Length: 338
Image 1 (spheres, rainbow, N blue to C red):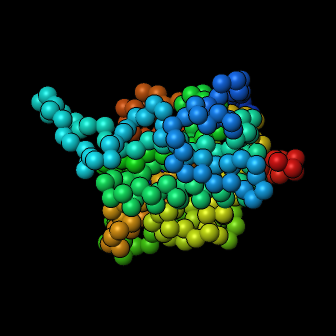
Image 2: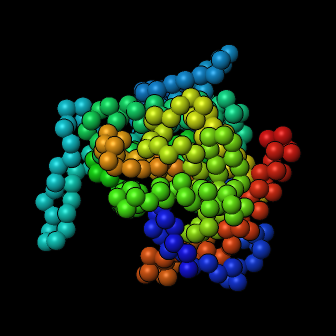
Image 3: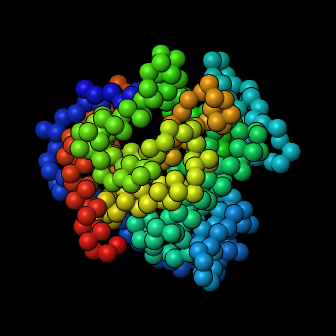
């Protein structure tokens, strides 16, 4: 059994429960017809008004665009100060669905996935992420923000056009609360940052898949599921919102590397990318340490009774073996000129 120092999650590693990577039953996702897609260039009237837009030099149209989600899970009026508690029966608690839910359209090209973008395009996408984080931090009404990317139906994507979703929340999500506790506990005990230590340990263990001067993509020693990857900046900082231009460009390159490693290993499969950014309170207080990072979750396996009953994951692929397979997949994609 292995425990991740960042998340606190325990994982049972048992490779004997599964065959080699190629034996996983992963179904390629169908590419939906672009007819009527609201995210394609020229159909901007089909979405809510643009909130953010940026274009590569020489582009005839926008390259990255952010709009309010047409079917938001959370919504806030401009004159609202925050979420209100709801009447709830007995021991339950409830509050209004106060928050922000946006879509960041990653490209005007319906057929392009994250792995197909240029480094410059990926850097522009990360600029959009940082801009939306800063915008809603300045609003002052929200406790935290989450960026997540669903690719493929099995990962929860309802539209096949590449996009990221952004949510600003009135409370800190439980996953971030646990991580913040781990970082704060280490700091209060005068121990190093757990993520900084994990990055060093995973690099020494040969589990680095891609790296440059600013960012690493790794297969963590205590990965909860097969082919799980963590993307972390080398500089121990609280939020992507305050990353330098070079760090944002590097993070974009890391996203490309992770997506290409997935495609080079398995082909077109479903996966999620989730950004764990410091809660807004942690960004304002030096005493609340956090090291922002992202997680790449392949939809190679499902949670079952053991996971739900114990809160512990079972990983049937040794992270060392996963690192080798993903590095080889990335090499195949790079060699193919992707």
